[in-house]
Amino acid sequence: MEVFIRIAEIYLLFFNLLAFTLFGIDKNKAIRNAYRIPEKTLFLVAILGGSLGAFLGMRLYHHKTRRTSFRIGIPVILCLHLILVLLLFLWLSSPAPLAISPFFD
Image 1 (cartoon, rainbow, N blue to C red):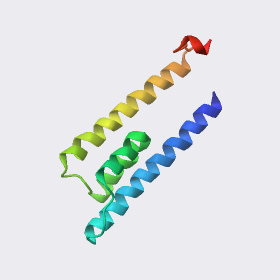
Image 2 (image 1 turned 30 degrees about the vertical axis):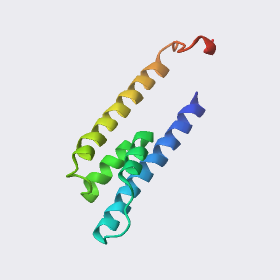
Image 3 (image 1 turned 180 degrees about the vertical axis):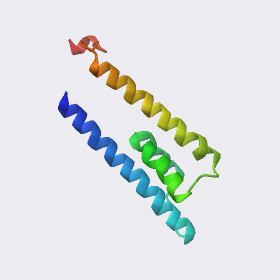
Image 4 (image 1 turned 60 degrees about the vertical axis):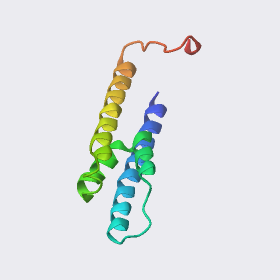
């Protein structure tokens, strides 16, 4: 179980750093009128686990803050991720976690 938690931590750290970095790179490219990172890529990285990094990148770099899809979408994804992590934590910390499938018995 500790290995699973460690892998999850590394996974989330990677995608959050990636999202934060991508928002910074895209902001820099926007200033220079260079080729931009597609919005679907920014959303995909957020959905894959980088929602906190995307949210912080939006705030720190003041990037994509006027776009309604980002202004609403990124916080919604972040809230969903926080709920998922909370539910997973509660499930793992229960005395006997319930099997989510008969195949896990």
